[in-house]
Amino acid sequence: MFAKQYGIVGNTEMASKKLILDGEHLTIENLVSFVRDDSLIVEVSTETLERVSRAHEFLKAESTKRVIYGVNTGFGPMVSRLIGKNQLVDLQYNLVRSHATGIGEPILQAFSLVAMVVRLNTFLQGHSGVSEDLIKQLALFINHRLLPIIPEHGAVGTSGDLTQLAHIAMALIGEGEVFYQGVRQDVAPILKKLKIAPYQLKIKEGLSLINGTSVMAGIAAILVDQAELGLSIATRNGALAMELVGAFKDGIDPNLQFLRPHPGQIKIAELMRKLTQGSRLLRDRADFQFKYKLNGDVQEIKENGQEFYSFRCLPQILGPIYETIEQVKKTVEIEINSVTDNPIVMTERSEFIHGGNFHGDYIASAVDRLKAALVKLTILSERRLNFFLHHKINTLFPPFLNLKQPGLTLGLQGLQFVATSTTAQSQSFAYPHSLHSIPTNGDNQDVVSMGTDAALLTAKVIDNAFVVLMIELVALAQAVDYKGDQKKLSSTALKLYKSFRQQLPVIIEDRVLIKELPATVAWLKTSKLYL
Image 1 (cartoon, rainbow, N blue to C red):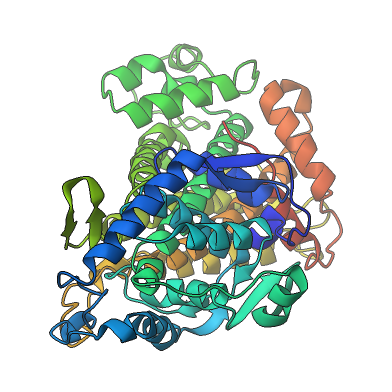
Image 2: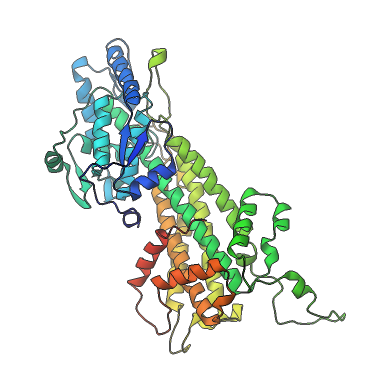
């Protein structure tokens, strides 16, 4: 879904709109804009290039004087092997080619693009030891939308995204495949057509290219944007649902929230008050409280004095999801402006620091939290859908919101199966993938993050969430049509209903929806229904 959403088709003409990178100020919003707008290009300042060049020159000078991991030594468990000075470049090519071993379907083009932008950004801090030439080659690939094929099955996320990034490095040196103008093809003839020479690696550059968290961090940035949109739609759906069942207003009353002052709970309740402003369908608690005469005996009344939790507890359920997204956003924005390879070149201090900034647990644990939050959001939407379709529970609407002749026609019965099965799949994905640590690399990588796989699973859960949110919106729109009192809706709810109906007309006769449904999901993901 992301590829269609972001419209990545390739760029043969250099554009005028620029994203200026300096290694320190890249935002999620920048990345989202970059993959949505094919005319944007990256640009690096002269001052930043000078910082990069100083680090590279320092690395070259010191590579003949001291032992530096990955420059004149082997990798991982083979670090005890020193490499001859005439083999230092061969070492880098061997590293890239030996690690470009991913298998499976390509990850989405948007993910490949943001991974390159993040990788370029981290190089610009001048601590990776790469040359100005590599910066220019990577920028050319980004600006021409030459998107390396990155297979879905790859690295374990500890020396970073070794396998995934190796496929990017392969494309830079003129080997492997890319998506160009939406077509999968060998990179070599495309470079020849564009008059771009295959890159010639220099010392450490193979290691710098593949050692880091840029793939998982780039994917996570896109996921945060999608999660924000999903939460916004879930909040809108919840507000419309409250109106349709004539919910009481006190569930979103600010005085209730301030007695349990979690920021997310307060925020969601505030948003729902704004969304339902002007509604003539919500009820005041006082009207209910004084409606019946209390005579001392047990009485049965026909109306329910409290809604189901999926209506009444929206601030308490969506609030933690809001807070999770905000926390993950902060983590991701730190990561995309971090130096995540090894060793680190410290030109000013004339030293090299060997450490583990490439370890992906920050992103892995962040996307796992995001994934769990989106699973809960999906469950909430599915349960509310069930309420609207289950006439014996809601007592307000016909079975399966059938607007013609229940029994002869089936209404939304088939759609509920899709929502239920999709939610169940997401529940199976909910276990934190970052806990699936399996030692590898001769036990050198003995605790791993599984960061990119965790991000890809989260992407699947987000896709599923949009499917269920869309199906819930089908039900909500049907409920609006059944009630026929659109004039009593809040202006926001009415606008949502009308825009949705332009995408998917009312369902009266049973009809085949196999083309309408994917198109409606795609519309929802590009609807910009942010709060």
